[in-house]
Structure formats: C-alpha cells, structure tokens
Amino acid sequence: MKITGERPHLDEVREFYAEISYEYDGRQEAYFINLYQLFARCLREIFQERRFGGPFDTVLDAGCGTGSQVLYAANFCRFIIGIDLVPEAIEVAGKKVEARRLRNVRLLVGDVTRLSLRDRTCDCILSLGDVIGHIPNYEAMLAEVARVAKPGALFCFECENKWYPGLLWNREERRAALKDRRKGHLRVWEFQGKALTFNSFARGEIRTLLARHGFTILDIYGFDFFTYLLPIPEKYQFSDRPGWREKTVLALGKVDLALTRRFPVNRFGYSEVIFARKVS
Image 1: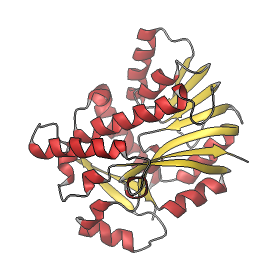
Image 2: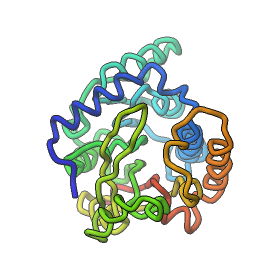
Image 3: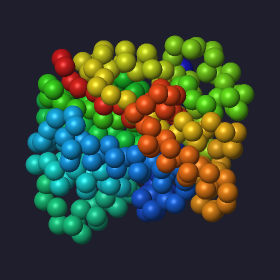
C-alpha cells in the first residue's frame, strides 16, 4: 500500500520539518539519540574506514535536512551536494557550511524525485532519515538516484521495515501489515502532537525495487529491535523526560547498536539502513 495524494502529503511533510528545522540536530528524545549514534557509525564506516570502497569524488545527500551528514562527508570527498524539500532546513544547513567556510558543498532546495543533476554524476549517494518513506512516489526517487549514480556507486539509505516487534503490541498496525505480507504497509508516526504517515517496506520488496533500478544489496543494518520488544508505548521513544521508561529505551538502544549487523536486529528492527551498489 502506498501513500495517496502525493502533493498534499509532501506539503504536510514540508510543513512538519519546517517547524522543527531549527532544533532538529539537538533533539534529546531517546529515539533520536539512538538514531544519531547509528548514523554516525554508518558515516564513519563509509568515509573513514572505507568499508564500501572509496575515497569518493562526488557525494549526493538526498534529503539532507539540516546538513549533519553533509558536514561530515565534506571532510572526505572532493564535492558534496545536499538537496532537501524544506527551505528552512537548507537555510540552517547553509549557516553551518558558512560558519565552517566549506568550499566543496552545494546546497539546493529541491525534490529528490526530480534531481537537477546530470546522468552518472555521483559515486556515493546518502539518504538517511527515512527520506524514501516520506515519498508517495518512491519509485521515482529510486529512478533518479539510479540515473545520477555512476557504475559502482554506493547508495546508503534508511527505510521503515515492515516486520518489527512493535506489531505485537499494536493491533491496528498488525492488521494492516497482515493484509499483504509481501509488501509494506502504511505506518503512522506521532510526534509533537502531529501524525505523519510513512511507507514501510518488506525485505523482499526492497530487494526487488533496488534490483529493478540496477542496485544490489551489500549489507543491511537493523535499528530499534530491542526498544520495541517490550510493550513500552511509542511515546516514550519521543519523550525527553528522564523517566525510567526513557532510560530503558536508551539502554535497549545501546544493545541495538551493538548488534545492528546481527540477527534478529538486522532482520526485524523498526527501521533499517541499507547499503547497495550500482551494478548496471
């Protein structure tokens, strides 16, 4: 099942992230603390440890938000392009780039389903923060990523995993998931009094989508398996109060991070980071 009403949904996403752009990097909710640690690990493995090749010449951050990944990658590549739908986020990113006097960064307000880049421009594409899950026409995004990727390019992105332990405690979402076990279902994320709808993806589905656009999967990291294994309401993932539930989420998140490449975390985490190679 896909999100319907592409333009109204993208307007909703733009409005939501515009409101939190100026504080997004400093979020202290347990979910974001754990997530940022996972992203830092992925970036370190890509750029410092060169686990997936490199060094990289031209990097694209598709859905760059306020620029955290852009700033990091700029230290390890010749040139990086950051694109985001939200002007407010690009404004924040631009101030960071200016403060650091970086000369190898270009920031653009734009739609990742219609990239203003030439064919075979990039040898590394990042898309963290579940960008693909926000987009109703995610096939168009994958097609654009494939178009601008050089042969052999690395594509690292995060997406929502269909099967995760939270389904044990959420009857409504479990019913939605069971309607079609081979494809992802829509997931609702409640944050700051608002609800956003995301696409989730089944493992076989995401493999097929990537293969259709010339990518093969190299590795998959899971995230938030143990944090959803207990029936702790999701709101405690997104609370900045230092209560026992929040501390439990943070502690379980450390276990997730230690086992992110191992079963069952890499198979049944709430979300997953996928590393893929452009082979055709």
